[in-house]
Image (cartoon, rainbow, N blue to C red):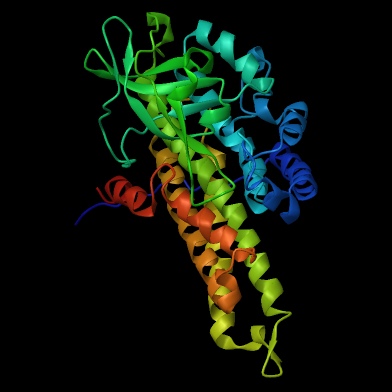
Length: 375
């Protein structure tokens, strides 16, 4: 009989997380109402620079960065309440991209690299990861290369916030091994960036061509292998936290409609055929919320262990499935109006479709979980 592995299921909510959650709730509600969200859909950057500056002033960009670099050293788990609130109010900024990049650098960079860039990220410098050169998050190889002369060759796909990033952390092959290298946006020609149209109009991404970019040996992160593994898992966790918040918002939209729309003389929320899926939405969202805060409890500053990996993968699989279900039912319950651009419900389905494939979809993570839990 195959032995099953019981993961660490600790769950705690610190005072710091509670304060961040309360602050983030009010901030995101005030700064990202639906009118503001829709007003940014057609904007160039997809976010309000003034709101980003306020987030920097509040110290949120330094939450998970060590004190010696100007951060608060509260750990990546303390960013989860903030990201969840951002998801609930569809507040889009470069926060997630920069946080993942800062964690990658903090975990894999040299002291010189960290001293040069982490204080700047605390102060609002935008950074992002450039990992994909095909559409498979499960790919174990990359076609981007760094030659013996330290010249990059290759194009990265769907780089989040690439158009506004000051720093790229690029995955490439070098001397037979995968490495992460630092590339400054100032070194790229304007034609290197090709903006892409995304299903989620609140997000921004572009393809980036790194052909001919010459670097030095100092651009390589010395601990690239472990940093790459951790950054993928942290990316999955932050995406899960944002998706959980968006699931709660989609549920709010559904409940508001079910308790106000009258058909055949009755509120449509009184019909069991609509009550039951709504309860499923609630259960899915609550399950995701439990899993993201469980992961926040056990993911620390050190290299992520097997329990942390299990927690991140479980959170991502559950949260994005919950949002996909909520977004789909939100449109279905609104009937024909749900398919129109003016209906807010479509924003959540668009986000669900985009988030499914950020840092691996549910099937990808459950495939890994099967090996982790059942072997």
